[in-house]
Length: 625
Image (cartoon, rainbow, N blue to C red):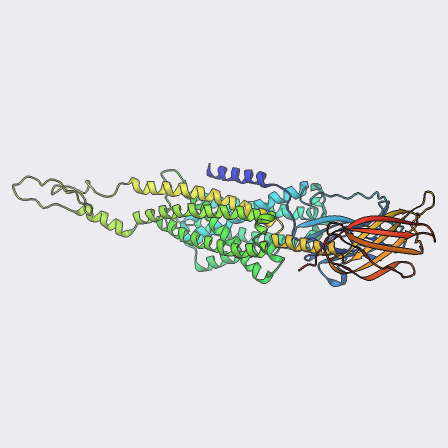
């Protein structure tokens, strides 16, 4: 029943928190820029991300206005930079609006995708259609997320149960509950790892569930960082299976009634090495492998995972042993409970210490705790951990009482009370019984040991029941912490989100491109003027203007004037003082004193006597600090 309750809690939490998980990396810039209008066709398209990325042959597609692909070759890293992706374009491209659709995999193993447009000559209608859903909001993405929860649960059960046997109570390895727990942990971790490896290709390329058995995709997935980590995990699990089978035979080979063989120091060393290696397969392909201080973050992530497994898996192991029923079942020794209590305390201390570092590394600021999904989820995890520590304090109290009940000093006092006799006066009546808290009640001389004054036999059972209740609550809360931890590993860290927003802000403030239509003075002839303002911030700016005819060709005009006005503050009009540069108009020293919405007035003289004035608004930002 306990196992069923824990499984139900896990499933309920999985369904409750199932949602699209953000990825770590983000697009920080592109060339051509989003929404830009180019005079000539570019030779290639380059994307820049906030961290290193990997991609497949179909990761970057450039689509023409007619929805035809114009990049004949797959993407490559630009100039050897791991945080870039570049594709070459076909030689001759028609004018119009082009769509760039991309999907790459960040260093922490999560796919990200997006799209943007640029135009050649002048903007036009486009038939290109790209998906805008989250990379995780697919059948493969949701299934992949559930399997990650199963993998973490299997790791906790396997590490916790094995540690309990190797450190706390070696005899527990011969019990059926512990053997089943080890088997369940190994099977859950192995099955989820195989499924994750099969789904890795469709997960990265937005494929269907049925494409999981595509050998080509599987081969490409194995060569990636995440796929290699999953393969290494399977090799380690195969070694663990052999060792578990060997240890089971050692227990089965013990004579009936004989004490099972205790694990030696070599067994503990091998177990610790395998546990560390398993944890490394997570740290190598998760958040610890990307961002700042990777050299320190990797071992911290390994310690965090191992402490989680020792604490939560050990709790579930102890809970199952405490709930055993039947006259043939031997209760858990108080000494084993005491050893686990000390070990769990150290594991929680490691969890808190490594968790504080990881929180600082991933969040980056106090404001991010409330302004980002990662920060809010982390606050929830901290609240549950505080509740766990409060419940654990009661578990330690019950453990102390149980250990005191079974202590040698207590047993000596009980045996002394059994042998105590009361001296009697010859011929006198028996003395009345006296109450003494340090000795047993007096008994007539010559009585046997049947009249004992030992503490009630129900005290130890009372302490065990109290401990069992607290351990149950602590284990359920531990499952909640595990689920939240798994959600955090699939959520974009606050620091990365801040870097992405800052990069987007810089990219957004880098160039302002305005395309303003105007009447050319001829029937049914509508021209356009393209104004480029760079960097689009307070201070000195460059202004360039190009005039296009109705058919998209360059137009030559006798005069072009651009002024900017800040109407709210009464500033302007400020004349850009454009000069004819033989094909376009430009000025390189326009100073804008204040941020905000500015009105751009463009006056185009089409003939010696005809001119037209059009206007548009542009947002000027402050200088970034």
